[in-house]
Length: 577
Image (tube, rainbow, N blue to C red; front, top):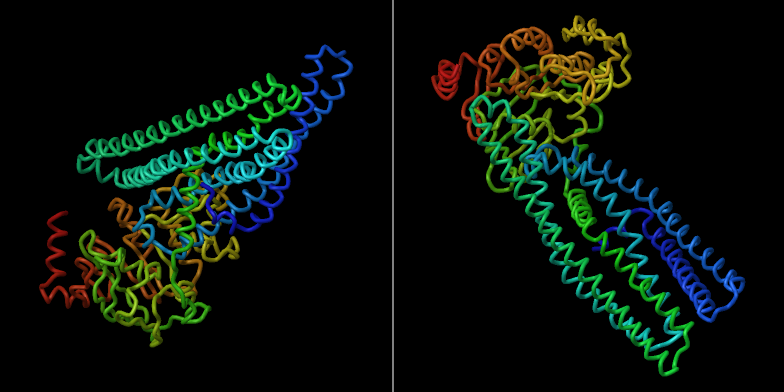
């Protein structure tokens, strides 16, 4: 339950020592509380005057107050460390996701990544807040109480010492069963997240194909499976709670019987017997409070393990083979890929024996059927995917590199996907994504070149209008123009990667946007993945892809004359239209 990796978190060891010392003090307060409450009760039993029990009751009240204050202090000490730790973990996860790139997302699923990076960190926070204090209390407070009980009467202390590990062993057995159920529940939750995200993404396509109701049943089955897994965890939780309460209550009853026999035969007086009886529930209390939160923290433990596993994944090294400054891409600059391979799972190749030469300010179109590898190739060219090691060669301006996840390369291109990401920020800040220090005049000029001026005039705050998540909605065409404005704003980046930027736009919007995109091509190396035929006439060179291979390449005129894969694909697209 207590993951040893917790002690490796910054500041956790020091905090654990402080919490252990406070737990010792809390144990002493519990003993004082029990002692003087028993003194007051015995005094009342012997019909002493009310004034004689005032002092022990005041001491009891002070000890009780001190015990409650210690609980508050421990939580106050824990919360800043947990807040900082989870904040650091969230930043590390986001940085790791950026370094791992889309291959990790494709392998694990978008829903899984979102669950780990967002809700997973929240569950880790709950896990840390609940488990650390309770585990330390369970390790310290019972021993303090047991030592005092042994000083009063060793027989009851020996019984409590013997029964405690037996209860823990029984709880461990139930805990393993609960852990197995919780693991299945967490996997089911991630599966449900993946299905939900995939459904949202593909809903327009499913509706067009008339499969939305059929797929809704699929989502229902997944959610129903998750419901059953959750109920299975709850059943185990209820069983373990009942078993713990039963055994601890039975143990306290046995202690009471021993004390009763001791009072009858005169081997113990009323005061120590009452103190032992009052302390017995507190002896088991840390174990019971830990067990009550055990199941609430299982998902947090799983999430913490998932985060640690993600952070331990290897990332691309040797990122400075081209230096750390942006490339000065010129008309004679070159990019060469020879026999490059890539696989998402290490088995089935997604790209095979790629051979590609690019020079200067070429406009290279990438076409192929859905699933042919166009987006994978764009991601490989962007350095988001790392080619299979020790296979083929990759050179930039004649210099060999192991991958394109190079600092200099990634500072030299714009990436414009199907759905450009818009941040919850002002329109100006979104346009200045690659140039955060750009002035408003330069941002306005870039927006004008991208054809955003008329739309900006309709906005209440102009360039200061908030857009993105939770703010003003932006159409697909406007989002693409914002992405283009980013390219117009930074003239130093001479490489453009387009991943079907008009795939989700209607033909009228695409035709209008095309007039804005074409001027951007000037003096740039362009890789343009598309399935729209009219873009091919704007390309100098075309790559035809099929099942992860470049099956044909050349100028549009050469490919048309060859009457090969390009012509067949073109005829299929025309027939589909």
